Image (cartoon, rainbow, N blue to C red; front, side):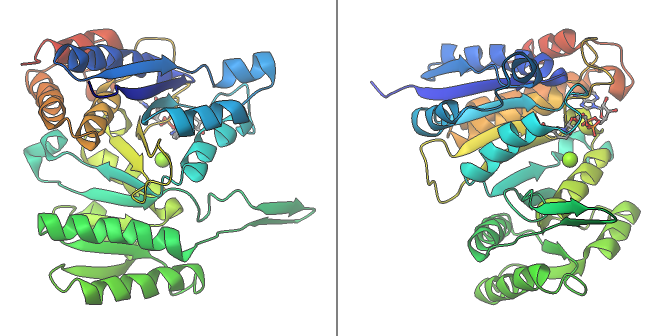
Length: 341
Ligand code: NAI
Ligand code: MG
């Protein structure tokens, strides 16, 4: 019999655990349909850090890297850790050291008003302005932004391959007019891949003009590729087209599969301390991220069934407070699971 897929669960902080709890019955449902999987829950987050001083111990990192196939992640960030140190050492480290270069953030069209927005953001996930290198002196602060050709190439190759397979336009967001070095590298690799993919309708756009165009009319856009910082901003803006932070899904993966564990699924949102602990969090972003993980694992029927259940539940009026409804996190999760075929 095939080895079970080993999925590490990291609830993290705030609403992370609340929304991840709604994904667990979906994993159980997949298992009952014959998918061989096992899960192990890891305690890393603010509570663990404050109690022990540990963020993500090296032993846990190597365990995740070498003995798991995937990570399902809630969110990290806690007002009791104002410098966000644990979040950096847990989530940013996992993204960087597992080389999860491609952060794929689709806006599922069934979530958008009148189903008119169908954008997928490909965000570089391991470097750029989030490389955590810099310094603060009196009156002067520096944040470095580091871009390396292998990561840029991996991200853009994934975006071009997807654009080619869907026959959809691809836009690179950049500011190469001022960020001559870093975004100059992005432009060079982009132009090379554009020449190699004449079938893809690809263009670069200055990110500021792109944001303006997106807000005026998102419908002509297909795929958008961007570095870490711009991709973060653009994908949160795109979340607004489909109902906000509570519904936006994401999955991060290492296309070159440098380790056994080469994928991490997590909602786009953070730990939402303003609503944590009140049962108000929308689990849809988490559940659609779980569907993306099912698809990544090759479990297409389960992925499609979960997405259809979310779509049907929303169409039937099941909504949490952020969408103007009254359902709790758990009730929303149930309303979705009830619709599993
Ligand atoms: P956030 O995404 O946590 O919250 C932004 C807004 O969206 C808040 O009004 C929140 O209530 C709402 N929201 C978020 N998730 C929701 C859900 N499931 N249902 C309904 N409403 C939801 O971003 P914010 O406030 O900037 O950051 C809070 C903390 O999360 C910070 O410590 C930040 O560093 C961290 N963070 C962590 C991320 C991660 O773990 N991937 C991503 C973004 C932020
Ligand atoms: Mg963000």
